[in-house]
Length: 369
Ligand SMILES: Cc1ncc(COP(=O)(O)O)c(C=O)c1O
Image (cartoon, rainbow, N blue to C red):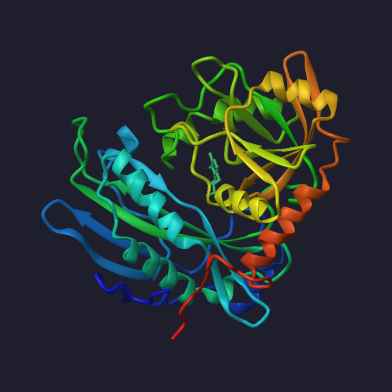
């Protein structure tokens, strides 16, 4: 990892009132997911004519934005999610941060926002993790979740790409995404009422709007006793796409791993991409292709479909035990997850934490000095 970006130096303004070590230690014991935040944030400004400027690491505080700010009206906003881990040898590790930088770049282009130099994205993360490194929890299953984001900040009510933006990174110590932990199987609700994304839309961009439009479906899932929602394609309402906040993979009884192909409507998950590589290395046949919910039901019944798991930065790899839908449910295997899911999960976590060989150079060490 580079420290300060070569194209834009970060000014460091230390928080004059950081949380006491005692209070921090208390929060780190059981941080939950996304509710506890560190002492600092990274902020970089963009304006037409000036480009990206004024990069700073500063005390975490609210933004002051104009009520006419474009993001509040037209939703020009994108974000990313990645984690920093503390290795046994004391190093602080990031998992494939360049992949997040690249996806952020692509999301910016799709939302007509100014792409951020990948070097600046990576430097902002490095500098924030460096200054807030005491906030990395060390209990198993926990890490420092990093949330880079960008929003339109011009006070203008015309429907038009804004002329001012803010890029920022905040950090949040986290435990498991699911309350039940990330090894216990979760339940998934098949949504047939709402859509998350359609052809030509923003499905493969990581923008706030995609998540806003998934929330009603997520409420339905919860009303039906499920942890997550599964979306089908909007054209035939037949093909499995992804969950509200994770990709999905299917383990067959003939050593195949099947996952929906990237066709513009689903997110290019960094975890998904990494798992497909690990599965290939383990000798599995990987198929990125369409898979219908009808086939899922049939294959689960016949035993051809052995395991299903959700994958993403927040969830890591979490087994799916059951799919529920109007009028029924389909249990996967014995409903308790399976060996292949567990092995892939352990393999991935060991690489992420610097405990296993990293043949593809996925893990990057945060530069402290
Ligand atoms: C809709 C959606 N799909 C998939 C993913 C998984 O992506 P990644 O593995 O890069 O975290 C996420 C999580 O960020 C997501 O929000």
